[in-house]
Image (cartoon, rainbow, N blue to C red; front, side, top):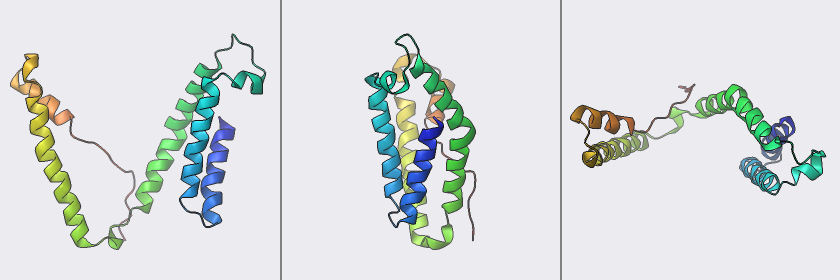
Length: 145
């Protein structure tokens, strides 16, 4: 797990340093896909000399979940938030973006409300479902310069 994380960081920052800005992310995603294929084919047993009875996939999954929750997710949202700069965006595109979100919500909430009619739910329960279907995303840090 640690080696995979280090390789991902090396690809991301190494390719950026070499002048290939987007290649690091593609390389990291490709590495994850190849790793998944190796795990599915149980070829990890050959590489790690594990016995057939070892539930290595479950343990690897638990390790990755811990690393994701404790390290990667906070760093990812912090990095995205730090890179987000409203001063480089045109005001018109900000207004258009807000308009698109509002139009989407004006269509999504009534659709979610109406989709619950056959379930014998109260009006209050349907409103709760409609509100829970709203998209939720946040970034930890926003750079306002």
